[in-house]
Image (cartoon, rainbow, N blue to C red; front, side):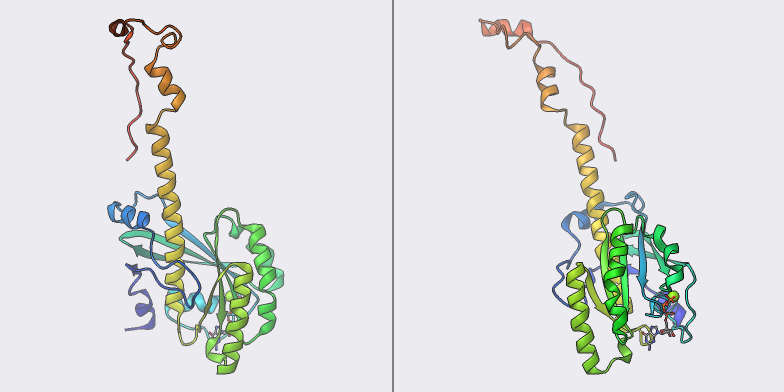
Length: 275
Ligand SMILES: Nc1nc2c(ncn2[C@@H]2O[C@H](COP(=O)(O)OP(=O)(O)OP(=O)(O)O)[C@@H](O)[C@H]2O)c(=O)[nH]1
Ligand SMILES: [Mg+2]
């Protein structure tokens, strides 16, 4: 079997992928997401797409990481990304199909502004630094600032240390320490991996997808519940109005039997729950 076929073999997720290391708390799909997905007929969520954007200095290994995951290959030769590139992967999570859109940006200074509009609507921002190049680690905070400026709405942040295969044991300990410290500062989840060997590449993408899917579906379920409550629950004021004629409280009938004559039937039409 070719590498490319192997890479495409399985995008079906039945269990939540754990983090690379502690202390990240997301360990399972929320109960609401489980039951919504199990009851769901594919396609009725309206979720459809998760959008992920990958940023970081030039040559840190963004394209290599995407190539490894999407095509199961590793580009030895450095061909810098000009502007922006795009990949799509289809996943099934708890039986619900959806697509992951992966936007690969250019780290090279002169192309950076091209990426700005692509942050908008992203569910996930991945900042990559090269564990053998501490300069790229120092620049993480400026990528973070850019991401904060450009994204609108809730976004999950991941910090990836790349080129793990090039690190000595000592370098790796140091790079992990710095990576985790930075991740804590920018409230990102930290991963270290190698696109050359493929170590932890699949696990990383699966983790991203689990976390983002869980959050997006939770929001969707919440929004639907809220909407259906609004539809099925007339406000307190309107309930009083509907059940009591305006003069009932001011002039209560003395004989309780007389109340019967005050009974009026009001027809209320409430839209059905949306399915
Ligand atoms: N040894 C090793 N080399 C890597 C790894 N990832 C990427 N590289 C090499 O690093 C160089 C740059 O990788 P790219 O993926 O093109 O870097 P990029 O971040 O996309 O760079 P820009 O497109 O300019 O922003 C290439 O020569 C890759 O072969 C890795 O995990 N291990
Ligand atoms: Mg690139």
